[in-house]
Length: 318
Image (cartoon, rainbow, N blue to C red; front, side, top):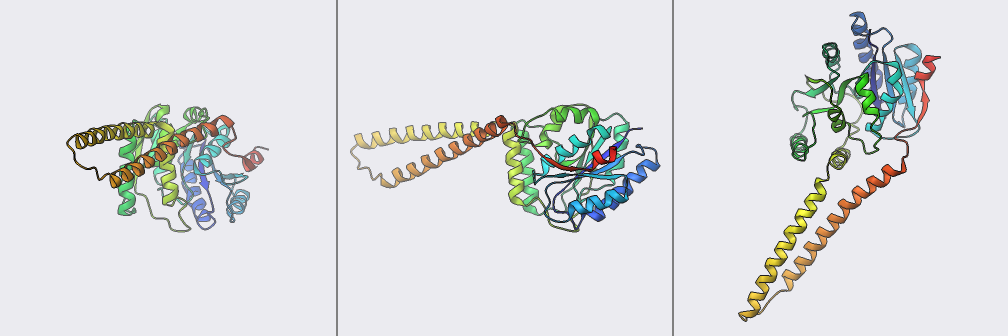
């Protein structure tokens, strides 16, 4: 019987985590009772440097329930690194893995469906939203625009799927072989391949605590996704540069014609606009190039993506 490990990244989730762990444990116990997963299956919560009582809640639950364990990062390393850290620490303790956020906005009732699909031979089962009813119009529009953009630049992604997914052990092994620091798992997992399918569910509104992905972080994640898989922004700057050069050439021809027919050139406004326009393009180009260089710089340093301060999994093995 395959051992299931449910990896739960958590950051400042003291309000929602107790209830989330109860719900996840009920789902796990039901799967065990139906002989769909091994009795040695676990829930592993990754405390991503929380500043509240999240780690204490994990420790207390682990003492009371042998199916619950956790790891504690030395500081906050970010959601994507928390997912990778949890999979890295839990790999030798499981055969199949499900990742789900601690707020449980993703429907836990999709997990049994994922396990069923896994038994049918699928190595990756994506959890995707059937609708975006809980989103604002702005968030819905930006999400649709982001998926369309990623598809346009050649990045394979599952529409409306985040980091709620099931992966088999061999897929996790391949995923952990990706050593890049600039992580965008929604784009990396589809690149691995292996048989995959999608389970659809309705995403709920957060009941307790605050969202850990405000607009600023969502934009940052989107930018990481674009720069991790494509040099399209640099192509855009090149196209903009060529367009600007063409416009400059047209203006040069226009100025020469005006000179030869004897018309006075007013000029000052157009010159100032041109200077600001070209200056802006240059700054944008330098910023985009600098962004890529910065990511290369971070990759070459080879610093760890996460540091585990406490590991209850290793204590469980003793």
